[in-house]
Length: 119
Length: 100
Length: 136
Image 1 (cartoon, rainbow over the protein chains, first blue to last red):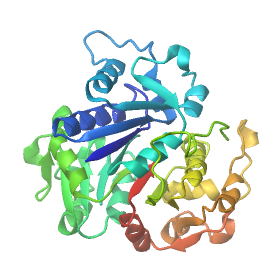
Image 2: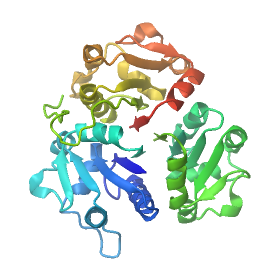
Image 3: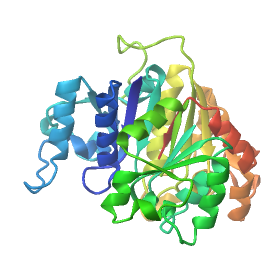
Image 4: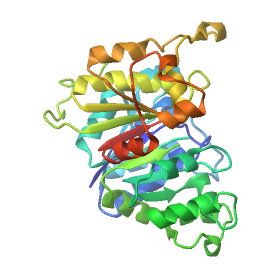
């Protein structure tokens, strides 16, 4: 099956992004495809290249970037939500791209299932 | 449909709202802080037990463990699943609705 | 509202012809958080994709469409009027729960836009039939 995932919250502040990541990881392990993860509302903060958690903790930005690279997952940040929160091309982490809300609706149409992880 | 809930039943009304909107035969999965709703002896246990009667209710094991909640203390009739089980539930049901 | 649209035709992968039942479930009050406003942006974008769009106002989400909001008093924009523009985008399936209105001491007359008032049981059935549910 093809999954689309909507992430509503930023890194560390809520478990939402971890739940989304663990779900995506398990889906891929089971042979499914995670075609797109769309970051909206505060979720855009996951794409900030300046994230720097303590060394002994999970590095959320890197986890997503590695998944994107290894499993061809499209990580999309909403341009409008990003601008509002200061997330732009200049501080966009590797593995993510900025695009419009249409990409979320599109994955809703194209995927078999859409999951929301939020607060 | 698979319904997921992630907030504690004592923090906000997401668990109650989810239970009120799940049709007979739907699946409900408690994740993150909502796993407290799956434990025995709480003030919401009766409502959850009622849901167990008409829906298939699940709880995410890793989230129970993270919070020090024993799987032995889960309400009878609720099935503990891991993330792969969560994926299977999403596959088995036609759509997924998150109660935040 | 956002000026940056990502419309069908902008992307080679756009799947034309597929019509799914989308539901946007609003459960949060306006202004105390940004979800009401940003869900509305999402709903407006969805209009360009010719899907079967449903908007459900459940729990405190009902407060998003209450009349006489004056958020200028807290330094914010009044976007509640935009709900009235939805039918111009062919988004006409707006649902509110009767129990939710009663719980909040509200009636249909308190609402800024025409909605279909349904019971909680009817809302449950409606939700059960959706293909894609986006929650905030």
